[in-house]
Length: 207
Image 1 (cartoon, rainbow, N blue to C red):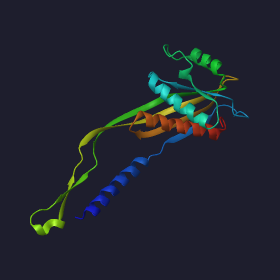
Image 2 (image 1 turned 90 degrees about the vertical axis):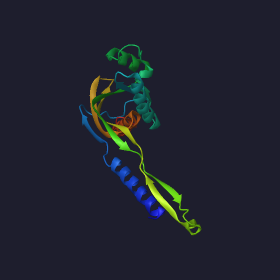
Image 3 (image 1 turned 60 degrees about the vertical axis):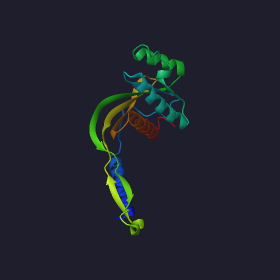
Image 4 (image 1 turned 90 degrees about the horizontal axis):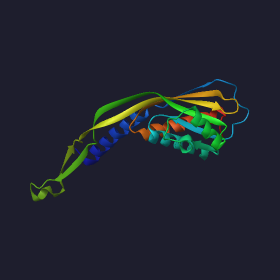
């Protein structure tokens, strides 16, 4: 079998696998709980509710960073609270006072499903030149080598982000995000931050 044909065949299989992985999109829904403000409130405090400070800080930084890139003032609450004590209403209120935020986005994990699957690495092609006789100089054998197996971890996550107005201390808006299986926590958090920031802009709560 010609080497070019084998290479194209394997490349086609890889492309199909990538398309299948991207076929499941992130689902985003939202609910208004109060009248939308006439103008986007100035300054957003991002709060990630979770026990792991590293994950909380990563998510808050991602979302706050996206909001700032769009022209908003935004702060990660973990940068303005005492992280040696549990996160509570008082510590969030203190962060609001310290930053002057007029909007608070509180993201919380609602469901997480982790799947462990055995996967096989990409096949490779080994080319060997035949040396049976001097006439075999331009003849080659092609052998497909199977990739080694490994354990792949994927997680699907459902989270909700509640948006509070500081002026009247009311719940204004809730964003629900369902992210299909992804391989790393960072991918999940980055995708969640992207989805929340986009829905906040669509709702007119931020720029």
